[in-house]
Length: 106
Image 1 (cartoon, rainbow, N blue to C red):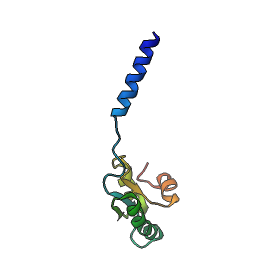
Image 2 (spheres, rainbow, N blue to C red):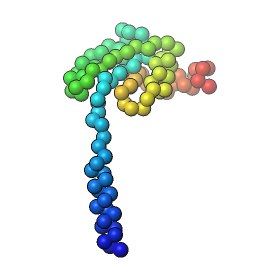
Image 3 (cartoon, one colour):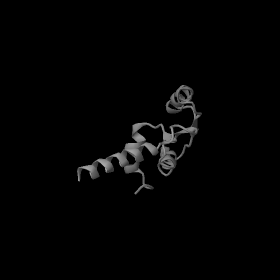
Image 4 (cartoon, rainbow, N blue to C red):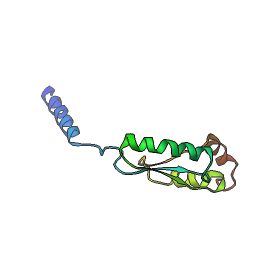
């Protein structure tokens, strides 16, 4: 019985060595701003993006998606692939208050 457990453990460890994750990031990262260009969130994101790109070795794209008090941009990010390549930069009020006060989210 003990030999069987050791064999299963060794096989499990060998299988885990074969599984390798894809390095992150392996493609451009998109930062979505749910407001028009020129506000504080947009300016800060555009200042941070070049440094992120330099450190990560991939382009970082800042994209504005204004409309519906920020809900359009947040909806775009929420419905996107959950792979970490599309992120949102927002103010706390948009994520906390708007879903409860907007008539379209009910």
